[in-house]
Picture 1: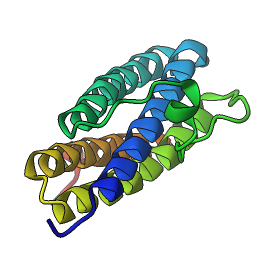
Picture 2: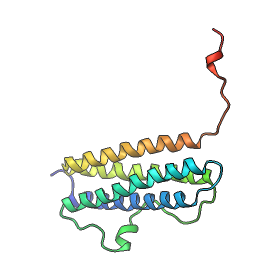
Picture 3: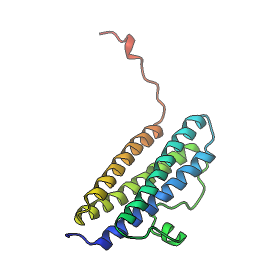
Picture 4: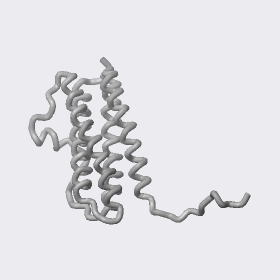
Length: 161
């Protein structure tokens, strides 16, 4: 085996923790978003947190398939997280920007775990992590698109040739 099982275990634990904190953050934003885009962002944040929550369970189960216990204390679950929730975000634009930044962090952590899985020749785990990276790439695109300011664009249907 080329890679170390402990490297993969550490990387999966970091992925689980970071994804869990991303889930918590998206859920907090789902509860607290206000403003003219409330309905859209409330639903969008809901999609994100539901997806992240499902990933948390799958990440823990992938640890178990390696005969490694899932986190058993809050310290084991939260301490390795690269995502931090340290102060409230009050406005919708700030929530979108924070989720976008933290989504990038999640992707980096998942990529590290995916590389460790490949090195350990754990193909199933590597494939699962690649799917998660792809999902977060889509969330990133959607979050960045939500961050863009609304601009008036000419209606091209009536443009002269």
